[in-house]
Length: 143
Image (tube, rainbow, N blue to C red; front, side, top):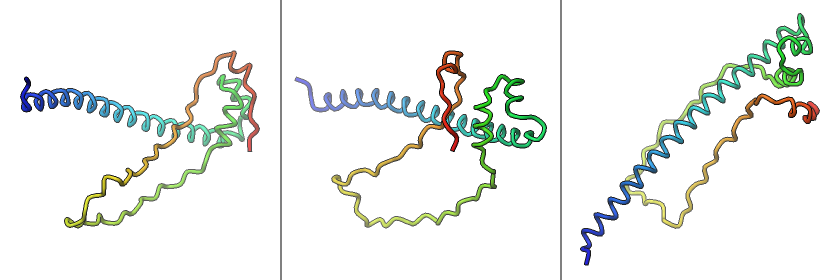
């Protein structure tokens, strides 16, 4: 018969291996999420700059002509031009100093559900299209 100490040791050993795998998975997801957020921010900056350049150059070259020269679809250029927003300096948020917790407070009860966490929606990413995609695509009206 196995002793209770041996059972406890076996459980701890199994949990340690699982915890290591869980930690590695969480670490990798965190790294990839950070890289994705940085790439999305960079893409948004590039799209903003493209829209600005299109607006600035509209007096000397039109979207249709740019589309011919660059092999970028006129509808994509128009979307960048019309979707641009004026850039404003970012305001820094002021945060209140952290409130000290009362050591005599009770921990939340086990019946209290955890707070829901909302994840941001992924940004729209431009994807190159094939000739077949372009033939089937129907442009959406701009509002």
